[in-house]
Length: 462
Image: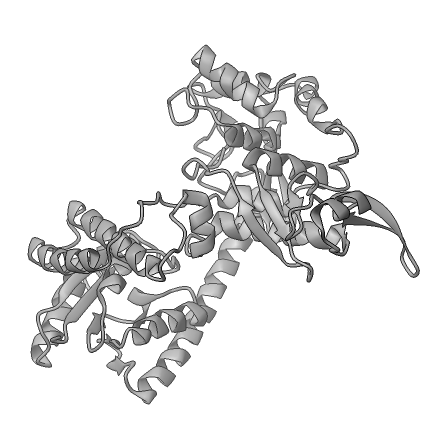
């Protein structure tokens, strides 16, 4: 096949005003470079208003799906490719090289097909990462000082509030009553019961529709702004930002009273949050118990009773509760924030399992077609380039039949992931119930996610 050239352009928003970094300027620069060096007319891809720190970008993903051996990717400079540090930069470059292609950074005259180019790129990426860390640190310092002065330092605000001209939180006349109604619906009800009640009553959610979900209500129930104590987390520090309350302390206590009770039997979610969600490789459920330890005294552990071991024919060991709880938090947080893990993506979207060894390749073609169509709708790729690439992908798709059933995009829920990491044991148990989590623990203590209820689309901060 004849080698092709691709050009990639990106702006994060503030770069758009700079003529040297505008999307048309980047495209013209790449076209002129290709013509001067005798390369084919580049197929152009662009990501408008997308941060370079993001690993997942529509146009970049679509372009990578088209690369093959001998192709060349042109970009204005390193900042158009990556702003997330040396690890991200080298990962993207290795991904290009793994396809047999090369990356050329025009302004720096660097070519990743040469050893010198790779060395200089790693140095530039290190310097860019240092600059980024300094910017982040300055930004966090500014936000911390603002929070200590009573200013809400984030753009997103709890549902029912707004940020006034002084950047302080105050009740939003348009939504505060809906927020109160949602929270009061939780008194004496589970999250699911409250969501059903609000839908029946026609109370509009933050989306403007009566589509309340348990996860949204759960997030609201953890937001102490509703009792006048908004929390801004700066690193490991939790800063309280005063604001007008929407609920009384008595109402807040009533909301949480039911959820503070033990959830029946010997489950004890305040000590063993994984009980009911954890099984061994043989299928036996694991319960919690106190075991005597020579050096540490009584230790909380997850174990399988003798009766269950005989029934399931297993001899799996017990595990320290704290060890598995921490592992479960880390695993769930990664699933809720990482859209690139194929195994986790299959769990969350219901994608078809691997069958004939070509499933991943078929899915890549499907994703590439979807990305290509999205770019065309957004006007980020010319029709000529779109039709050419689409025909290639369709030919690959026909050759790879049978097709998998399409999968929805995995929603990202970074706030819920943060909640999982920081939740008290009984709170973690409730989150596991809401998400219908199923975990498997292997004899070496490694956890595997077996099931997770598909989530709604990522929600804004409540």
